[in-house]
Amino acid sequence: MALRQIVHLPEPVLRRKAKPVTTFDRDLQTLIDDMIETMREAPGVGLAAPQIDLPMQLAVVEYVEGEDEEENEDAPAKPKKLYVLINPEITRVSDEKVIGVEGCLSIPGLIGEVERHEAIQVKALNRHGSPVKLKVDGWMARIFQHEIDHLNGVLFTDKAIRVWKPYTEHGNKLRFCRMKFLTPSRKGAKEKPLNLCDFVTLR
Ligand code: NI
Image 1 (cartoon, rainbow, N blue to C red):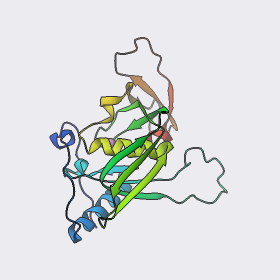
Image 2: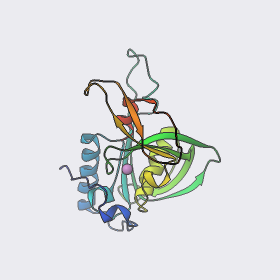
Image 3: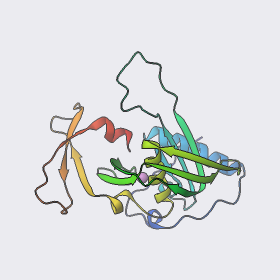
């Protein structure tokens, strides 16, 4: 396995619609393993192939459900769920939408509030080319929507209600940082504290 280089805006590949994967050979397995390793090393909770300069409909997602709200350190660690999404299609969405804070490995230094469907159903292929149907909700549904957007050349900043640049006031040991309001849509909005753990978790 090897780490792949993550590309940043304004790389044009991030704006292209990715092509479907049609060959499920050994090279694809190596690529998927490299993407998982690259996502973990970043660290991130998802990585789409365009982010490593490959316009292919392939994304990996790994996230611990409920990690953010878990306060009890004695509780057993929850297993991480790892998904490989190939040629994914969102087939159903919940009417309910939720606003959450996102970042992106390809847009370092910016985070934003994005409205997403609370739950979705996805049709995709797994790493061996077999069809799978997935139902996800909560943060997993948010990550899926973020990654599937990548495969269509869409970035969270396109959909964000507001975008901020987070910064710390006392070096890098702060658990909390403050966000500076960047977009002009709500003049006079006050800066508010952000849980830095969320920022790290959410890429
Ligand atoms: Ni992203």
